[in-house]
Image (cartoon, rainbow, N blue to C red; front, side):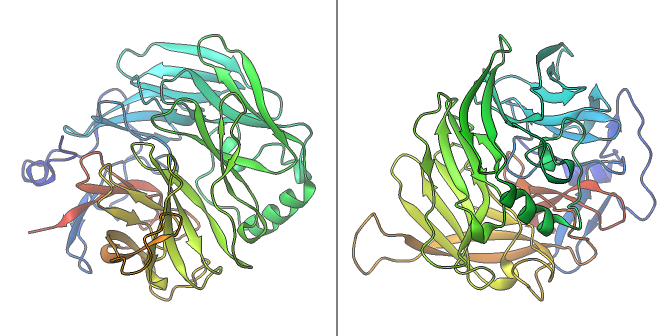
Length: 418
């Protein structure tokens, strides 16, 4: 399945954002429809027209199960875009916070006015699933769409921060990081607010608490293939927390995925492989000095670490379905890597190093990333995270950017323009 027939579309002057039932505000002339990045030679296209439009967080599901439609949101609602024809359709009116796209059915899950809903993007059929618990939010839908997971706090947090994170507030999530995020993270971690992690039965609306803690529970994400396996994190300053965990939906098999081996070692921004076999995450040994993308095999516990240079470190990474290519969204000098030239969308080709030593599968298998620059992001303001993800056919890297002022969704072609 081809994501876009870009050359054909441009030759025939077809719009990349063809509206069917709503006309959002048109973009300013400064936001081009497409261009060849002169720094990299790769074609970039703008996918959305409405200022403030954006995809989901980098590790959530953006695509319908047939891989034919991309889902994104804006102030005016939740939309689908056909990846072959570029036709867009609003499927949910504004005021909703998109949770995720279903892995089994062409449904979007979202919250509105204190309740959880689903809408089938093909038929428009909509139903209320359940009310949100007090001081609670939901974050992820499991592989067979039978459960939704979230967290709640027992009491309101400091400065009225009643929710586990801005991502779990029940209305449209903010796109940009707050300027005081570091202080907020420190205060929230130190508060040790009692929390519960829960699952809601999609069919009955029944809520079941599966884990309680005074750790800050956040970033819940179901396996894309195993409906009973849930990943989550202990949120907070990364050098102070054991971040990455998994748990079964009955509350069993609580498992820590990474154990720190040095002071100031940090790890996070975890995500699943498309087949659910592997958990990937950013690893720094120590913080801001040495950079890896780590991989953990869920079934065996085997580990692989891919090394990269300082400028190649990215806020978020992602991977193709076959695991042969990775991408990253770079970072400005104010990020943890302090990279002097890191403002790029990157393509990474992984290489495993030849093992000429001990054949011991309990040891980390080392590798390296070979980087290629795809998009010059020097005009992008990194308080908005680009949140890269490959298209289902692996021919494009999709990201969001404010390089022209307002936020839009863009895609860059992996192959260089001819």
